[in-house]
Image (cartoon, rainbow, N blue to C red; front, side, top):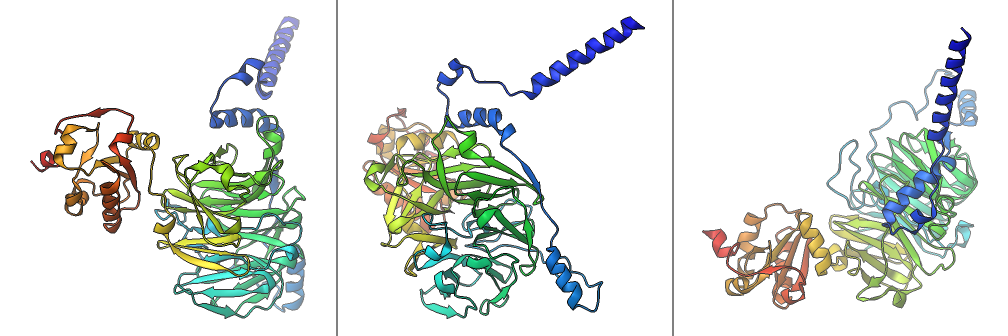
Length: 530
């Protein structure tokens, strides 16, 4: 029996040692630190090493605050009346800043989903009262745009750029707005929450707090508001709100969601995440990446389709922006900002990024001084357009239109084509081609036979109108045109846009193509006809 007991004790010790070894994260040795890794691979390694001690979960409380329940019970003769927040809950579908959220399904419409709902002037989060005068946010309510701003101002902006002033019951600064199935909810300073069900009259509802409320999103059929002092509020109907404990005292300056997750951020670099609305994890980015990345101040977070985009600035130099993307919230991929308009990014600094949106396959970024960045997958093809001298604080994208609002109650409505970057470099064109894009030669048959890009399609410019839809019927297909000097390819691009293609690019001259070329008529338009 003693021998058996000794054997059992030894086995238990072995199992304990194995369990301990599995629970302890492996340390990076010096040689691993010196390895050249991609940013994403490095991020994965860092997160797997560090997140075990930086993530924390918090349970959400019930739908209505206890105080409001007591008030309802005292004022109502019927003690069994159910709360409006729980009874007859609507099937919420967000229309903030553009198109509806597709509940449970992947939406084909990326621009302006509920996740684009608001943006912030990121320099002054300490008090909403110090915000520069002007619009703070804008959303699309199905017919026109509603912009909110300082002084309690609420304006309806019509597609023809006329403005209708709407009555507001408060004078506090209004920071965010969302529109859901005819319900418009506005948040602002001093715990202000305004609700309108007709799109014209806004009424104040009790938030239960006097904190500054910065942002609002929709997740799993409920409204979520982020605010100062680590505040999150939740409501099923927009009128009855409950307080969520988050575990941070920092201001939660931005919140956004898609069908899978809801994320919120603090200026200090904390990222709060949930997949169910009940359990929240918190990742301290600057702590997790300490020693691997520079510390940042965060500005905003936006879910665009399946991807979350996070904007901010370097703590050491507030004039240098940072834009990162992630699907999970733990591993973040930075957007390289080294070149804009063919020039070094230094020529455009300081640059403060405030709000992001998606236009087809490109990211639009509203910045300070009326600057609007168009980011493409081509890291040397980024484009900057100067729209005004006013900071861009909010953006809405819908039906090929881009609406921007900013300081001094400035706004503009632009066509998407004005901001889209249609030029592409050979390096990115090759990468896109290897990933399924079509490269189209629009020169004559003789020019094509002499030399062309290997694997391309030949459709002469004068046949684009008749043949493009037959040869490439998918209007969502990425198409890259080229010719001898870039003139005919630009004409082909315009024709493709008129035919309804969205993801079209101009490579320019074949002489700029440094990769493999071939000769012969194989693949030419005449051969295709036969």
